[in-house]
Image (cartoon, rainbow, N blue to C red):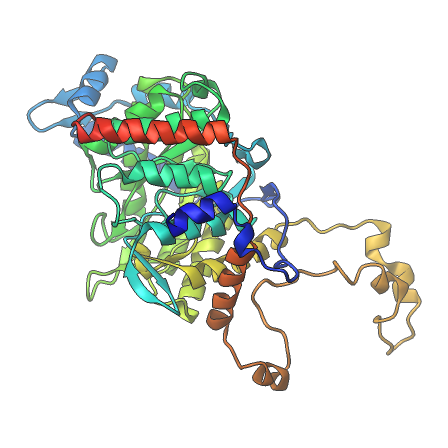
Amino acid sequence: MSDDGRRRREGGRARRSTTAPIDQLPWQVVRNPHAPMELLSADQVEAIHETSMRILEELGIELMSPRARALMRTAGAIVDEGSGNVRLDRGLINQALSSAPSSFTLLPRNPARSLDIGGNRLAFGLVAGPPNVHDLERGRRPGNFRDYCDFIRLAQHFNAIHLIGNQVCAPIDLPANSRHLDTYRANLTYSDRAYHCTAIGAGRARDGIAMMAIARGHTIEQMASSPGVLTIISVNSPRRFDEAMTDGLMEMATHGQPVVVTPFTLMGAMAPVSLAAALAQQNAEALFGVVLAQLVRPGTPVMYGAFTSNVDMRSGAPAFGTPENAKANVASGQLARRYGLPYRTSNASASNAADAQGAYETQMSLWGAVLGHGNLVYHAAGWQEGGLTASFEKLVIDVEMLQMMIEFLRPIETTVDELGFDAIAGVATGGHFFGEPHTMQRYEHAFYRPLLSNWQNYESWALGGAEDATRRATTVWKRALAEYEQPTLDPAIAEELDAYVARRREDIADGEP
């Protein structure tokens, strides 16, 4: 029996620690009770909007899918078949926006892990897409299925991670044309959270929907009225929707599953160097995807996706967690709210290591996402090396930051007991509150207890090995894997999933999409 097969059957029990479990926040609905930050005035938002309208009306977007172009032409868009260019008028855009919902619910196989996306609610997603993996003990290596499964276990274990992204690392030890089946099955076996379907082609999107339907005991038709998966459509900026990604968008929309349209607008490379121009281009590309999704199926949940940052103008390398990136995260939220759409943003860093640079760049991105009232923070845990590596240590460091943000967003209570006048009156001038009843009643849960931070004095810290946060993170992720408990999955459902994977693997081998 393979090691992975053994883990699957043992349900994590063989790896479970006998010590007290990691102290972490409980699974919870995270809300942002504060007013969103507004970097742009109302006039500036409208100026960006009008420039976006000019881009769509005068310049257009290249749409490489013939099927999508036909749909656009039928709806009244101006289509040039020779170039694939499609131009939209604002009437068509407004009609699409009127049918796009302002919020939606993702229902995974465990209803207790459902996610309401929109309004003031905030969800954090696992890093997605890196071709490499890293930890301090084994170093940097190509993505593989064993590490993939361990990342899913960690996502299941840490309550601050609400959603599994698209292939947390690419398992290149599996066949490229069918590995999505293995990753979907791992998502459903080792976790009970909602997950991202890859949308590179209709077949892969349909497989993700069908497998979630099996896990929920539903038909794929029933999924349309109760979405359980989402996808992210990465626009090939500037102004291009490729055929495979477009077909994936249309397949998801056909089945009523949420579509997140996210232009990849790096200022100075895939977008103009000025932030206002990059936002206008991002806005036009995102709205184009919204229109296409609504033409396929009016009412399809769709998110306004933003991924605007800049490049290092000396080398051309992508940069994340910059002041420009943080401002774009805030400003994009204003644009999403102008259209009444839920908002997806990201938590990113360009650092090659889980170090101080990785932490402060991630913190900049995260604050921009929260101040901008993001509803889904993608790549929230584990992103390293500009998205080329999924890091075990960085995942733990990020979870600490996410938990701190969750606690920061918890409203301050001002009840009579919390105001504590009697406690203040009961302590003499110059005294202390350590033994005061008000303190003793609250001391266990008065403050956030860190997952990773070390608050010992220097001498105690040195005697304990003088480990920095990154080294401590190694201990935490290994301990989390030891504590992990596999969520229960009905054996009949597991067998049905296995049969589906086997059948589709044969179809793909025979050349079917």
